[in-house]
Image (cartoon, rainbow, N blue to C red):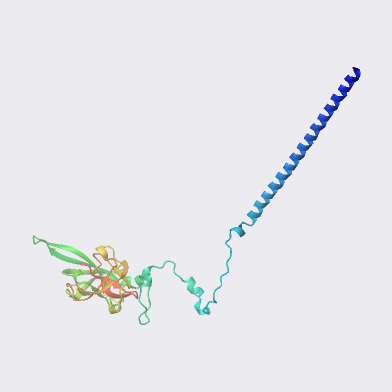
Length: 288
């Protein structure tokens, strides 16, 4: 009995030892598997990270369209000379604030200088006058009253001859002109033609500013036109600009062919100067 008991105890102890050995082997295998999985994960992460870094560093190369080689025949080019290149002065003097009327004038005539609008105004405005007349009129009951009629005119000679419309000074008892510089004169009527609607006055003075007369037969439709006058009788020296809209307009009220312009004209502009791009008078403004 004792021998059997001892044999059983030895057999049980050997079984326990074998179980412990088996459990120890499985634990070692598990640890080794975890290590291998971790190494694989680190390798994959490193590869992905490296790929992203490579793509980011070379993104311009991948996004840029592929260059293509195009075979063409040799082009015929003109030889560039110094004359064909814009000079530095031409580039510097380009006017960034140019306006359309500045490019509408005709080519210079007989060596005349094409002027800008401010230059035209500076040259001619001192010779454009405001005209005021005293007129006696009767109403429907026969009662007389004195009114003041306003208009415009321009001096054509340094000794004081003034041109205006005949209807501006019609039935006037007295005629006064005011110059741009503030001087005022009472004038005399030299003569008038109501059919042509033109009149000439005389200022008793010398060395007055005056305008030059141009040639209206040289006008072109679309050319620059400047009007200076005394609209409403209270705005002397007003300047408006436009173009020549039409030529040789015929109206039954006058035997003279008329110039049509889109420059703004108002009551009081009658008798004022219509100027071309050289600062010359090429017409008398008429609004009645």
